[in-house]
Amino acid sequence: MLEAADMPGRLTAFVGLDGFVDEILHVVDKREDAAHFHRLSTIDKFAERLAAAAGRSTNIELVPQRIKLGGNGPIMANALAAFGVRVTYLGNVGYPAIHPVFSDLCKRAEVYSIAEPGHTDALEFEDGKIMLGKHSSLREITWDNILSRFGREKLQSNFNRADLVAFVNWTMIPQMSEIWEALLKELCPQFNGPRRRIFFDLADPEKRCGEDLRGALKLVSAFQSYFDVTIGLNQKEAFEVGAALGLASNDQSPKALANLAREICDRLQIHALALHPVSYALAVRAGKVDMMEGPYIPAPLITTGAGDHFNAGFCLGELLGFENVLCVLLGVATSGYYVRSAQSPGLRDLAELLRSWPTK
Image (cartoon, rainbow, N blue to C red; front, side, top):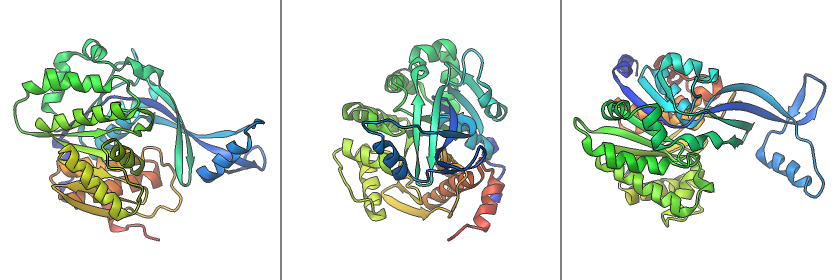
C-alpha cells in the first residue's frame, strides 16, 4: 500500500451536497454524581425506557461527547482528503460564511457552500446509533442555488475533470433527484475525455416513498452511460432498495446479502455495489462478490461516520485501480481505524493497521 502513497495526490474528487453539525451524545441510564454516570448501552434498552413512558412521561438526559463536522458528504470528503486526494466540496456548510466546525475540512480541501448546515443529535449506543436531525436548511440545496451561488461554469469544470464524483445523502435532500436530472440533461452530454467514476450513497431511504426511491435509482442507473457508477449501502439500506426493486428478502445471512447485492447491481446495470454491515463488508463488481471482515474494535470511540469512511476507503481503492477485494479491504480498514480513533486515517495509518490487524 505504501508503494501507492504518493498516488492520491494526483487524484481529484468532487463531493457533495449535504452538511451537518453533528453533536455526539450518550444517553444516561443511572447517574452516580455530577461527573459520573452509566450510559444506556443498547438501542433495545433505550427503546424499553421510552416505551415505559407511554401514557405517563419521562426525563431523558443526554451527555455531549463531542461536536464535529457532519453529513455524509463532508465526512467522506474529509476522509478522502486525509488520504491526500485533492478534494473540492460543495454543500450546505454555512452561508454566507462557512461554519467553524468545517474549518479542518477547509484546510484539507477546497470548500464551497450554498446554504446553512443542518444539525444532528447523534445518540450513540454499542449496537448502533439514532440520528435526530434538523433538516430545514437542506431545502435550499437546489439546482438554482447551485448555479447562482456556486456557478454553472465552476460546476461544469469540476464535474468534467474530477477522477471521482460523489453525491450522497439523497434521502435528506428534497431536491437531489431534480439536481441529478439537470446534471444528466445539461452537463453530462457535454463530457469528453476518459471515462471516470461516480459514487452514490442514498443514506437511509426508509422515510421516502417507494416511488421516489425507484425514481432515484433510475437516475443513478442513467449515470452509467457517462461514468462507472458505484452505489454504497449499509445492510438496512440494502433491504429497502431491494424491496423497492421487488427483491424482497428477510434473510440477513452473509450469503443472502451477497446474493441481494448481486441482484441489485444486475437490476440497476451499474459498475459496482458496496454493502457494509457492521462487522464485515462485501462488494459486487462484474458479477463477482468479494467479502471481508472488518478489524475487531471492542470499544469504538465513535460510530457516526463509519459508513462514510468505508465509502471513502472503497472509492480510493477503485481510484487506485485495485482489485475488488482490496477495495473492500481498504473500506473496512478505513472505517475500523476511524471508529477506534475518531480520526480519519492516512495511508500510513492504514498500513500500520493492516500490519497489526485487531482480532478477538
